[in-house]
Image 1 (cartoon, rainbow, N blue to C red):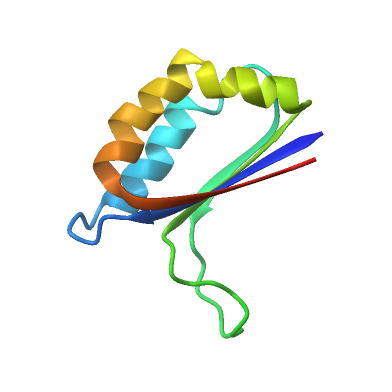
Image 2 (tube, rainbow, N blue to C red; image 1 turned 180 degrees about the vertical axis):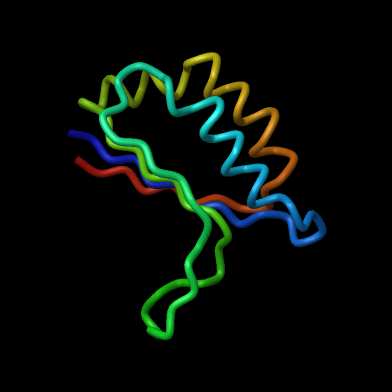
Amino acid sequence: MFSHVVIFWTDPQLPQAADELVSAAERYLKSIPGIVHFHVGKMVPSHRNVVDQSYQVALNIVFTDKRAQDEYQAHPQHLEFVERAFKPYCRQVRVYDFA
């Protein structure tokens, strides 16, 4: 298993950016081969101080292995997501990969 976690900070000037990003992730990324588990959603507020609440959207994908994640990175649907959703709606991103 290989986990790929992406945290997105959307453009505050675009009120619908988080919804658009979630929708685009579902549309472009979910069906890419090699994905075992796919989950995307908006940040959920918490009363706990240890919970980061500065971001707007998180993406959690589990792949069969690192090779599947590498292939995902070059897949045309992922590249289209980057162009049509990430670039127009996001100001910052953090990626966490682990096996």
